[in-house]
Length: 204
Image 1 (cartoon, helix red, strand yellow):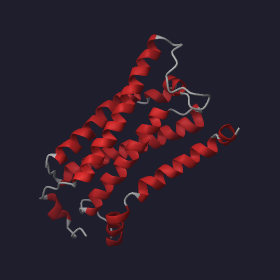
Image 2: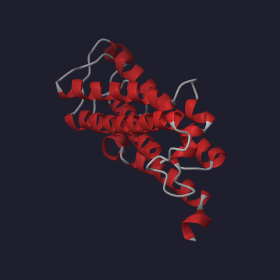
Image 3: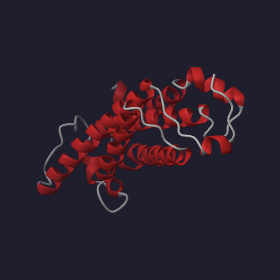
């Protein structure tokens, strides 16, 4: 069990993480970076040739090209995967630093957590847009969603268990043993939404 700490105590100390947590950041960061890299390459090919069909466009539902051509694919005025190239690269750097024994202050962990929160909220928005407005699914995008969801829940769990985020004792105890339940449940909900959105297609 992690000891109870006050905000003052956690502000003045540096906090590391387990090797398992560090490897999770490296792996999920690499997953997201791979997805962002492939989508970026295909986006450039699509700009060069409007008739280009990405390799992950498999059928009317799994159609990456439809996603890349949408307005939502450039939510901030530039292709979304370019944001991923930077963000997931940072996550890998944090994970590698932790593997090397790095320890960070509270403000660093909370800033990192805020970045992960932004990522998971952005992925939720993209999921909604993909399912109900664009009406297509991109497998590389799904890979990035999976990586971001695991990343967010485990970073949040780490900060709660270390006392960096205020939480009741029962929640800390739960996260000590069952953090994995949260991303699995989160992904399960997305899976059910995908299944029901195109139920007629999947069962035909």
